[in-house]
Image (cartoon, rainbow, N blue to C red):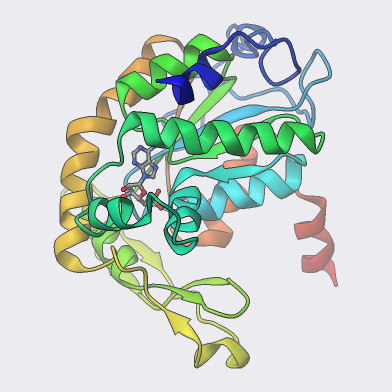
Length: 286
Ligand code: AMP
């Protein structure tokens, strides 16, 4: 258990000695947008009140788009985007001592043990801290109540964004996911076009196609097969859904229903977070 100790050890650095941001916005009025926000709109900010960077978490089912929005926000806010799935895949491709054990777990759609994942995350946080990183956006962690409790015990998470998308879109999005083996760019070949029914609005998510120079180099994640995605969704409901409640009870959960494709969803997310993407505006005006 020495590995867990590293994350559990009380820290005195910026990453771990911060007060809860939530308390500073818990009294403003609720949003009027279509998203069900459990917490009110956030004040405009880049850094939060005591000068440190944000410490946010993204929750949501496989395929919902955590990586897409977490990486955009991390660029906007100048904090690292740390995806535990990426840490697991890096470990797998390093062919280190853990890789065969991890390959079996990941390819079955199961969760890696809390101990292994906390060890990987702890190493990543320490390496970032040594490079002067502060703040983070976590994607794919915590995924169990135990992980959430451990994280809560060592640092204050400011905000947890729970991305939500209708179940029928999730499977299609996972099966359509592609990565360029050369540049690492992420694309999606699925075209999601769901008609309105029973009070649910229609939803259209166009494919995100690769540029010509990536098109011949696309690869699919080994755990993005129909059988494995269904198992990952089942495990999300069993092990990770309770984590939503964990943060809801602490007043940190922002529920965000994705309204459609990336441009529409990104604009709405920025609105709810009260953030401005100057880069987006510059490229739109160009
Ligand atoms: P992801 O890219 O987030 O879908 O993660 C890919 C795989 O890595 C998952 O299906 C799990 O096997 C493993 N994994 C990633 N994050 C965690 C976590 N927090 N706890 C346990 N296993 C994880």
